[in-house]
Amino acid sequence: MLDIKMEKNANFDLLPKKEDKYFECDTPKGVVSGAQEVVVKFTFKPPQIDPLLKDIGALKGIGQWVESVWECKLSGGFIEPGTTDLLVIDIVLRAYVEQI
Image (cartoon, rainbow, N blue to C red; front, side, top):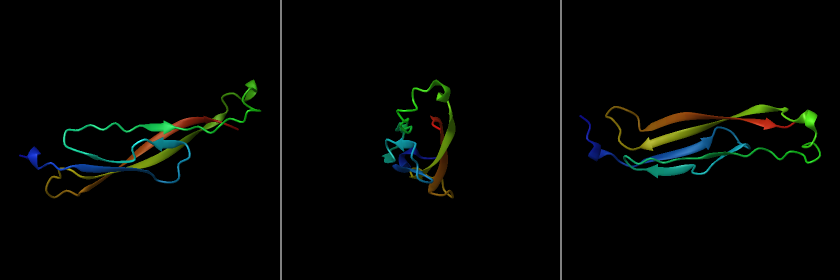
C-alpha cells in the first residue's frame, strides 16, 4: 500500500514545442503540493485584422486553423518505486484565424 505522507511537491513546466505567436500561458511554471489543484489558463491572441479589409463582407470568415503543441513536463511528487521522475504530456491547442 502506498503511503500518502511520503508525497512531495511536484513541479510543472509548460513550454511550446516551437515559437508560438497565437497562444500564451498564464502560469508556465509552478509547484503543486499533494491534493492541490492548479488551474492553468491558455489565451488565444489572434492577429489584428487589417482595418481596410475588416469591413469587406466577402472576406468575412476566410482564414485557416492554426495549431500549437505545448509540452507539459511534470516532475517530483510521489513516485511509485521503479518509475521515472519525469512525465511529459503534449497539450494541443487549436483556433481559427480569420485572415487572408
